[in-house]
Image (cartoon, rainbow, N blue to C red; front, side):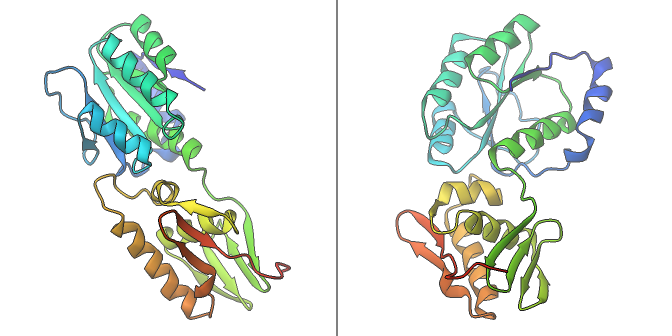
Length: 248
C-alpha cells in the first residue's frame, strides 16, 4: 500500500514511534538518486549515490532492492523515472521512497507515478530507516516458523538454529538467511538477485560477496555431510536439493 507522509516537524516523533521496532534495519543495498541538479547529499550514511540510469540498471538486475530519490517537486523527470521502474517486470517490486521540497499535491503525484512513500526532504534519518525497514519486509519477508529440511533436520526462524540429529547449532544471520531462502524454495533455482536482496548485499559489491557467503554455508553443511544439497546452477543461481524423505 502506498503511503503519503507529508509531515510537519511536530508530527515526526509520533511517526517514528510507529516504526520504533524496525528503525535499526540495514540499508547497504539502498540507492540514492538526486534529481534536483543541486548535488544534494544523501541523508543516509551508507546508501550508494548513483545517476538515474545506473540506479535503474541496479534495480533491474536485482543488485538492489530500494531507491531513495530527492526532487524539489513531482517533476516530469521524477514521474517518468518512477514509471519506468514500475513498468519493468524485473524491477516492478522495488521499494521507492521519494523526498520532496513541495506540498502534498506533489507528493500525491509521486505516489501515483509509482513511489511507495513520499516524505518531506528534511525528514530525519531515523524516519527514513524506519520506512525502509517496513518496505524491506515486503520485498524480503522475514523468516517465520520452522522449515523441515530432511529427516532429523530442521531450521528454526526465531532462534536461527539448525537442528541435525537432535543437536542444535545457532547460525549467524547471513548463513541463516541464505539457507532459509534456498530451503524455502527447495527444488527450485533461486536467482542471485533474490539472494543478494535476502542477504542485503551492497549494490556496489560484486557477486563474489554472494559466492563467499555460499562458500561459508557449504563449509558449515560439510560438517554434517549435507553440502551436496546446496547446488550451483551456473548462470542462474543456486538450488537446495529436497531430501528424499522430509518427515521430521
